[in-house]
Image 1 (tube, one colour):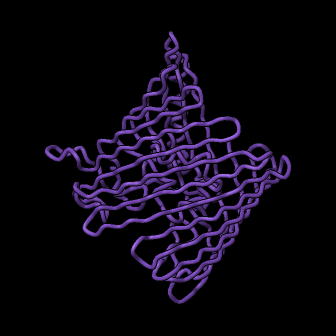
Image 2 (cartoon, helix red, strand yellow):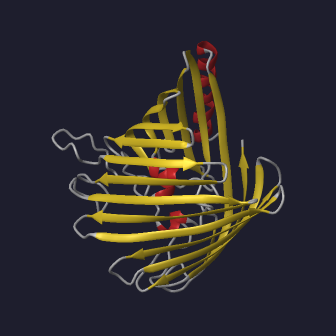
Image 3 (tube, helix red, strand yellow):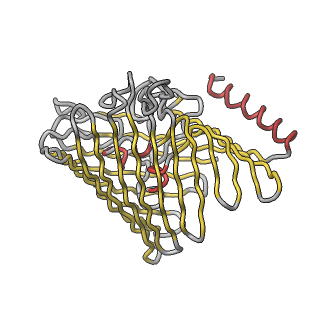
Amino acid sequence: MSNLVRVAVGISAILSSAAVLAQSQVTVYGLIDSSVEYVTHVNAASDSAVKEPGLTGTYPSRLGFRGNEDLGGGLQALFVLEMGFLPDTGTMGQGNRLFGRQSYVGLKNSYGTIMLGRQVNMTYIASLKADILGANLYGTGSLDAYLPNARSDNAIGYLGTFSGATLGATYSFGRDSSSAGGPAATNCGGEIAGNAQACRQMTGMLAYDTTSFGVAAAYDIMYGGPGAAAPLTNSSYSDQRISLNGYFMLDEAKIGGGLLDRRIKAAVETNSDMYYFGVSYPFNNTLVLDGEILRLNVRGTNKVSTMQVMRVTYNLSKRTALYTSLGYMRNGGSAAVSLDGGGTVGVGMSQVGIMSGIRHTF
């Protein structure tokens, strides 16, 4: 039995016991998604590669525990503990955190939910309904690796919905405590005496949804700190994202799109724009076709990356699905954005990739 399985079994037993004593409800849930991919031009020599991606297929794999307790008077206590893992190796994700996807406790009533701990922030939530491909291996995460990993450590969060309008915000005292590297771990723990701005992060969202359409705008600013991953190595440096996302239903089809303005203020200032537009259409109860076009432009440079993706999903049941994604990335100038999130590509080279896999939820 692997260490990950032992941890999961032990936690499940503890939480089950707690549920009996406190008369609360605890749910164990998860998702396993694994695929095989072929992708071209992974290096300057134009070599191709066949691999089993560990990061994601259509969704990142996870194991989670969520619970709530009725405290009376419309007030509930709640918690979420959710770990991410790489199915190809069984190792933990999100910078090798035990509960790297979510780890928070909170209170909920008719005025909304207050949460304390590591949680997804408003940049993540704002695009959930509009981004057709979501966390797909070929998707927005390829152009901006932060987007599917938009979480904050040491955070206070609020989320409330009132007659279709949703308000949300997070404030982090230290946005990222892991030193493992990568978009989900940038070694910026913050909470430094005498340097209140170090590694702070603020996000906010305003959204409105009906049965036929929805829009969401989000603001996100994170500050650097001593020892943090480049380029935010100083607390006076910042990385700001402003996004606008929307979708509408046209009979059975869902059409979504969005834009994101990003400004990095560091030793060298960088401004970029990202756009996406996608369509999802279910042909019947089992077959779904998705398509999306995405574009990243780094202002003041010749770096332009355009991505086109088609995905077909065949649902074997409500819990199990087979899928195939076909993607094409065209890099202009000196751009080197890989088609698959976390992958590699030769500078200025285009890439073609195909990925097929299986997903099961429980």
